[in-house]
Amino acid sequence: MLPWLLAGAGCVNISERLADSLSGAIQRQTDIETVRDGAPAYLLMIDGLIDGDPQNAELLLSGARLYGFYAAAFVDDDERARRLAQRARYYAGRALCIELPDVCAAVGARFETFTAVLESVDEDEAWVLYGYGVAWAGWVQASSTDWHAIADVPKVRAAMRRVVELDERHEQGAAYVYLGVLATLLPPAMGGEPEKGRAYFERAIEISEDRNLMAYVLFAKHYARLVFDRALHDKLLNEVINREIDSDEFALSNTLAKARAQALLASGDEYF
Image (cartoon, rainbow, N blue to C red; front, side, top):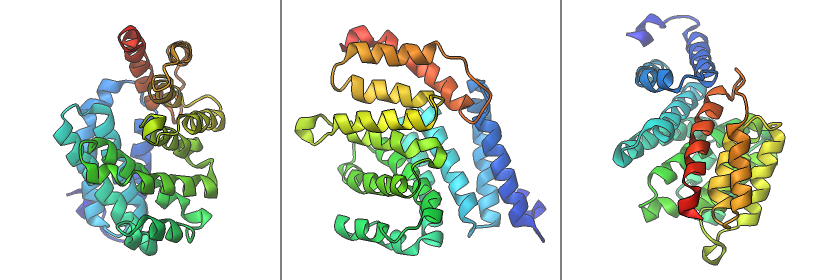
């Protein structure tokens, strides 16, 4: 019913403003249970907005962001998380094909072809590439037992590297967080690059002016644990636990980060 109510002149702008307002309200929420309980309704609403305006790349990426976040933050069932992450990638892929058709066509091509096409992306198009890269990374993580998905990691990494080349401060440097995780998925003997990962995490923290606490948590989880640096691990997590949460765009992410930091710190003795 919602797309019908929004039909007519100006509906595109109304839909985009509604999606933006919804996203902002969620990001500034500090009550995790409120978001967890309300998110399914938000997902259905964004589906309706997209159905009413299927060629709107901004709406599609809003849908991808919401589905990806919900899958990663609140879904414990692996198969359900994979389905939701697939929906996120589907929406982001549609946006990519609308805004960057050459990149869209090269996603399934050889790595060299894909990276060559990435060079054609301009700075004002970085938001689309970033949005697709986030959904792609989420899908890979949710499909971690599928070697076909794991094989996409180099392309995801290349997409995020292109984003930081174009605009490293996009989304407060969040692309560096994804690069940090991707660089520390494996130990050095299997192709991992932990020291690059550390540099990426540190740059993300620097760009966000220490406000992105999830960067600290992922730094501890993926780098400090990989290299068995207990002192760094505990320092990073205690930094998160002892910080106050501001009502800004990091509010929900930082609230989740504090909960994850406490869990990681509690399990430290078992890991190290």
